[in-house]
Amino acid sequence: MALLAAPASAASTYVIRQPAWSAADERGYGEFIAAIGGSGCRSVDSCLHDAANPYAASDPRGAHFLSDCADLPYVLRFYYAWHRGLPFSYVAEVSPRGHASDIRYSARGNQIEARRDVLSGDDALDTLEMLRDAVSSATYRIHPGLEEPRESDFYSPAIAPRSIRPGTVIYDPNGHLAIIWKIEADGRLRYIDAHPDNSLTRGYYDRRFVRASPGMSAGFKNWRPQRLEGARRRGDGVLVGGHDVYARNAEIEDFSLTQFFGTGPRPGEDSDWRQGRFVLNGQTLDYYDYVRARMAGGALHFDPLKEVADMVSSNCDDLGYRAEAVNLALQAGLQNQGEPARLPVNIYGTEGDWEVYSTPSRDARLKTAFMELRDNAERFMSLYRARDPRLVYGGADLAGDMLAVYDRAAAACTISYIRSDGERVTFGYEEARRRMFRLSFDPYQCAERRWGAQGAELASCPDGAVKQAWYRAQQSLRNQIERTYEAHMDWSLADLQSGDPRIGVAGAPDTDTRAYLVAQKEKPGARFSDARFP
Image (cartoon, rainbow, N blue to C red; front, side):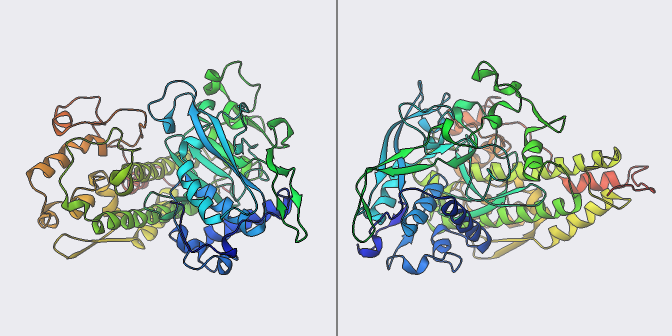
């Protein structure tokens, strides 16, 4: 649930004092999110009890905050509205537009069936519980132009610095949500996100957040302006009764469909969304480059040394977050239970123990980040050889300098876990990368398997022959970094052992950034003696 119940008191009573969110309220909300993002807190509960939260002291005694990724934007938005006396309403029910076996991954998206207004006198703690029950990633899967029968809680903002800001939500149609907390000077977006184990993590916006059709409504979302109407103001200033009214798209100054259709004229059909082009200053850009350039004020520049260091550090953080998630599964004793006869219907989106303690989605996102670092290193080398002015680098040996930065950042990263026999195993960043596609996402397997152990390190794993067979048979799934949420995956061990090419991916992608940089450094002509970069 979004909040574990504490004794009801005046402190948990929701009161509304302002009929609408002002521009100052929105700025304050952004500052609230930025403070949480910058605090280093590692769970929603610790974040809201952190000194970075100016409202922590006024929370009811015993309040304990929990949230997964889909709940997080609603929990934090409602929490702020509660403590600031602002109106709040939320989508309470959605239904698919067309057939869908799981409305979280409906092909054409969803529509809103019911809303709930939170009014003065409601209990805030009860409301947070109801939010958790009502909200899922399906709540965000609403076509940006769909306003009937009811408006979404969000609108599609322009890709611009004042529109994409701390508090803006990012929706990955593969079932994940995040909130922007900081925008770097170079246009990179930093986010916070939560997970089924209630941990809170941080990262950079990148290709882990895929684009998709408008019906799936992937991308950036801002909270739709709302106003409480028909309320009566009591003598103490509290607004009682009334109902919430939302602004229509046409009334929102920075509403835009650019993120779906590009910067040119909108295509005649939604199915043509892939044809959209993103043009800035006369140059056609990749979508992710376009976002970054717009957020940087219109210019796209890359500082390869800083970016390599930041990406290694971010990947190290993600490994640490994964360690915490695996530890929770081990503490719950899932590894001591037998393997179920079949995998869940979909390993990436399910419920129960698998949803809370497995890591296939988290692992896929981590592998994608390692692969993107390798791809970015190659891209920076291409820009370097082309003498591209977008590259901010003044040296003469980019491969060597990136390698040195990579090694320094990697040396600062340490991962450890406790084997089944109680012994601690410690290894570094490069070793984590080498075993990346051996890491088991299956919570029913031993700690050693969860961390891709081999040889003597694996000897302490108590898994019997059946679990060992499951681990070997899941390799094609571990190789897969694309999260196919709509696919049925309830395979048995025999299915996985069948060699069916439709199950998983035969080989893992290249994530070896270091080997690439070493090879580039050793290439003839790898150095420039007349560096001309800014």
